[in-house]
Length: 386
Image: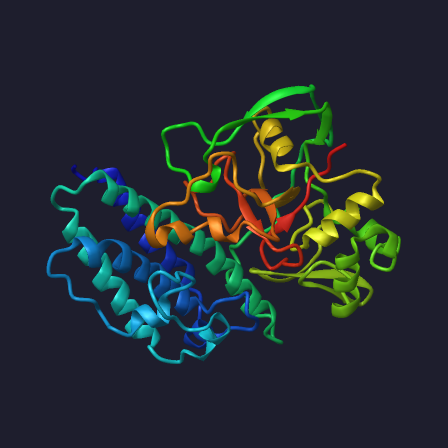
């Protein structure tokens, strides 16, 4: 089967975009890992390259020679089937390989992929290439998010890019979209790419509900703060209340009070909080507590998906009230790629939508993101339902 020019262009475009995201960095930024959830930019660049080498070039490219025998150990993330790997918390200790060496690795593998797909390849190999492209796009979102955390925890709060706009204000008036009681089809059903966790199209029954056509804004969330929302235990889950007390949480991530005003670290530097912009960088715990304070609730992921078909949205990753679980008839892929999603279906909440960090041609109305409820370094917000 011939590789279409569009898929090869998609691959090359994706490879270039990862490197473009790193252009504003200083060499010292590439190796920093402030917390375990954040991976150094250099590691993202190497890991996305390893994915193509491990799952396409090694099994399918005749006489392929790996770039460096140690790189599978260094850049494997969580694939137990593949072999040993650097502990996630130690990725920041990788002063070697150098940034220069990692970029050489990227060029080497990109060229080998181009060479491999100059001829015929079976559909299953093309499918893995497409997965690899979207895998790198996922890491582009994480890369930008991690860069923000790295720079946002630098005492100097350095600017990543003055052209980076993080605050897309929703200009339309707030309204409630009414959805009738009934049965609805959930899950991916088109011929285009999706992940395995979107498959298993199935019918769900929904009671009548209403969902906001706007995300919750900074102004609304400031109202929650000023009403002692972080001090009222009755608004929180027990685990969320423990998280607030243990970590002394008083506001969304990256918020700072300066001369009595709320300021916010963005990729464009320190700025005053825009009251009209959607609130961002909050945990599921905070989203739930805010909804409790408003006397409302978060939508389930099914309510979100059904309503999204009426009015497209997704300016932030949006917390839902749904646990991350498999759809009916979910099937994991054979081998290491079966570890991609299925083994994480426990103790996590589903997010829907997308964010300013999400690359183009990546999300869909059925796309399911997932994080543990305390995490908030991603561009996470919320939408209310009732």
